[in-house]
Length: 520
Image (cartoon, rainbow, N blue to C red; front, side, top):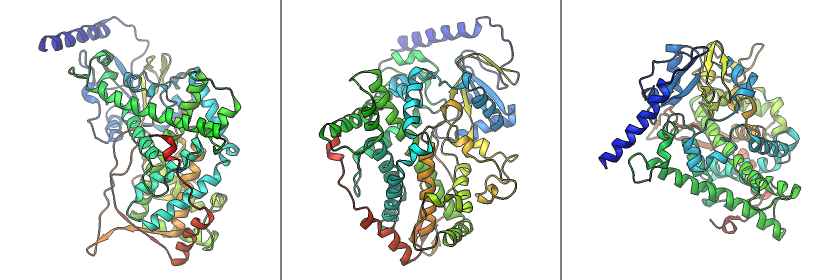
């Protein structure tokens, strides 16, 4: 065994020595960064597991400036800690920077076929065309306003009935919205839903797959050929688990819609609409487009929504003055005899500012999803090699004191007045040709949840034994970042507010779940 390991290490070392020592003529220097060591490069500069990756890369700004780079086993990684630079590169030069890095871990786990990780190619364009047709315009997204309206109010009802399970209720709300829109699927209204659980786990997988620096196989592709029992092969075993889960997610949901359509019992959905518009043959490219573009709806809208709304509830418990001001605006504009709806957004400037501040205070994807250069480029005098991984540090953008006064504070007033600070949604949903096609739907569900929660709930710190339970303002690592577990006290503002919420059971009676028909 020792001989085999030594042979493997020696072979990899010889290959990378060749890569490093092969004479190259650089037309410009790489962005500044620490000097690489032979063979391994700057591998020790990668964020430690479980650390706040965004803060790790922000430290590079102090050392090397707003754009920096490291090299790991010959792979260049460029970090952008300046918002204007990111917009210049990823928006104005999107033709060169709209691809995704080739990640062996994505190939091993099946995530390389998904919208989020496809390179900028014909399949990617087909995915985008389908999602924009069904969701990309205000009119298209507006078809689903009724679903959002119903499920947001059901979320409030669950909170009133069981106030200690906030995150579970948020997951059920977002899952109900996305799965109904995507597949016409109705979740278990009161119990755990097997599809929601499966897809949530798959989203956790995705968050790990795209985490910069987390997988050795991305820097040493040879490792993907190792058996799982071999030293260094553990990542292959994990990838297989991810792939199996992803396949079930795409195949079961697609088959569910087809079966419902065959019986004439389907609900209008993203998938049914695509299947009705075109002839889709089994195993065809068109079938792949339908399956995987539908799967992207959950990835782009469910876990991200849970993260944003978890941050909202944390922020309200920590900032009662902000909460009170927003509630007063709702009471004055909407009144107390009905719930706010989407048409009220334009008349609720402070509530809308709270909604914006949620995206800024802690971005859902602090490091966005990495881009890749599809050709060599000279940017701001620096060489960006073809295939370089581009990491936009969105957290750094939204906490830059040159753009945001006192960025650590949750302060919606920053977006009001004659000189509002930049709208963080410029960065929250991606960049250029990779911007999230479902962002309009995500914004609607988040705003309506924020507005209605403020209208009917008092959100406070939990009190135990006569003392407030402190809230740790900390967040998980991973591509989609969540607050670490925290407790809040959620109560109706009055009996009248509670009655408004409970009326949803009369207006929207609970439907039977499709869970048994799914066959998971």
